[in-house]
Image 1 (cartoon, rainbow, N blue to C red):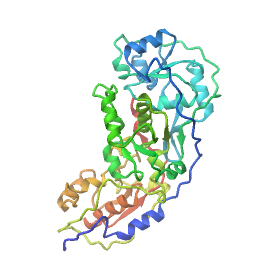
Image 2 (cartoon, helix red, strand yellow):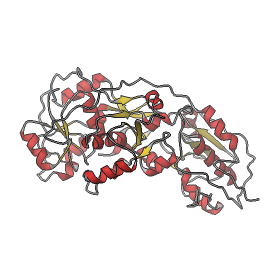
Image 3 (tube, rainbow, N blue to C red):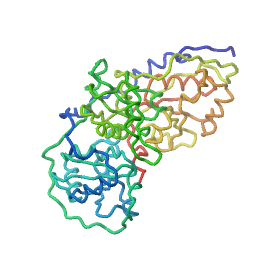
Length: 432
């Protein structure tokens, strides 16, 4: 078989257009209001406080809130802390979108059950310095003074307690909501704005996999030290400056499902940024809309395949529905291949699927790897030509690339799934 050189994505060149036309157009679910600028915190203390400041605030009557899951709380918590898992203020998945806010009535019930009152100063902690979902949810609920323990529970030098905490239920009501969330339409309206910076908090591999046009990568986990504390201000400020992020501009924070985006939100707020919005539906929503557009963090690349084992002339693949995927996945001769980045896959995936990141099929020169290397990549996770393959992705380019590779390797039965999926295995909620 002669060497085939292809710029960008070829062989199945028409597939990219097919993919885009077949992907569901997702309308904005519930337009989120753009709240006023961030609440002004107590000037005497930063948002992220060290242990000494944490103790001072607690001595002044601040309520200590453990935002970890109940099992982690029971294994050991800071004395006097009440347990309010951030997951209780979120919905694991709604219409294929992960980690959206729960209904207002759920907020009222959960916060009341924790004994919190609207005028309380809160001291929250988790496993590190950036419990973003807890912070932004409690800010939405109207709490004006929220502080976070730098380093999380691991930074507390005192003895942890396993004793149950007695809580007197409050009559908390959502009467002063502060919503900094924005919807997709708002983000789209800012794509060409010189006064707005769109910040992507996902891991670098996910950013390479596809991102909102013009977005800047600011990996949320890079803002933490090895001991889970916030990086020194100078380090973070240099990172922000290198990406053109400054206080004079509006910041739109997003990630895969809203978790890392909320973590970046805290970090920026701690540095004095106030004009920050959260695109909560994030890449889960954006990537499903072919009209929204997405960019890849790479230039043109070349396929150079010499001894591929199959022809390119297989039949047209089918775009499957969610119900079809769930039914077919029961067959041991069917394998669902998720071609998104490993970090996106680990955060949430179709149950039983395997991960083959489309970018892993290219070498350092952006040339397709040898057929032998490609076969090994797929066979190691059980993807072989005798099986029916269902490719799952959220972008037309990634879809076309993966289909092309499998075609060159002789796979005859490859179909697509690009829609929402109810019943994700949600990695974010597995962490204690």
